Amino acid sequence: MKKYHIPTAAYENFDDPGKALAYLETAKMPVVLKADGLALGKGVLICNTLEEAQEGVRTIMEDKKFGEAGNRMVIEEFMTGREVSVLSFVDGRTIRIMSSAQDHKRAQDGDQGLNTGGMGTFSPSPFYTEEVDAFCRQHIYQATVDAMAAEGRPFKGVIFFGLMLTQDGPRVLEYNARFGDPEAQVVLPRMKNDMIEVVEACIDGTLDQIDLQFEDNAAVCVVLASQGYPVSYEKGFAIAGLERFEDVPGYYCFHAGTKQTPEGIVTNGGRVLGITAKGTDLKEARANAYRATEWVSFDNKYMRSDIGKAIDEA
Ligand code: GLY
Image (cartoon, rainbow, N blue to C red; front, side):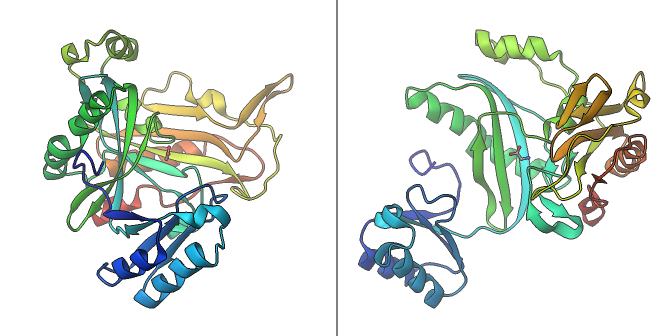
């Protein structure tokens, strides 16, 4: 991203603790310190003050708290803002952007509790305005595809742009080379195109001939999880009510952690089902989705009750 001027968090690499400490004197707090190697997911420190950051550099590079991973480190700007997910199809050259979505990653209402794979989504995001879209089209989307090609690795498939809408404009938080889950559950039901045609166009390099279109409505997905997710939970409970979704347009029940047994379909994971409903706007879609969550029952059923509530603040 740095090489191709794609907006992301400002960062610098260091292999000398003295230079890292000198850099901190000029850095805006808070900062993120990352040991530049495998540290079993632990080598990241968020530091609010200069003193904390100096201590962090010593911990990583001098005390080697995370082992050899601390031989090099990254000091990165701490970004704040609203997160938006934007999925796209890419054929190596052309990129077609799907409608935006927003995930709720924490396990409990009010964004409390542990991080999860995603407890629910809504699409489109009211925070992904035309202005934000224009900026991303100009500085992020095509620039990413062109950069991949320039590096000799033309990308074909789905790119998931994890964006943060900061006060200084949109920034890339992360890329994933896949659909988002549960973002896809609210984006794809609103797509008007035939999926197979779009995928074939990605393979054939003819995506420029595809006019990707989305319905002028909204969708909300509420994840039905097992109580205790993401830490520990029981599995194997019978799921009732799945047939309620048959032949009901605009309502979808996506299976995530389920298993077919001779006795019927049972829970088999932390996130069990994704219940999606469409509506003319986000408020209606939210009401529809929550109504549909009542159609399904299983022991240990758990869900957040505030998916899409951010809509009211928009
Ligand atoms: N929902 C976030 C992800 O799929 O990575």
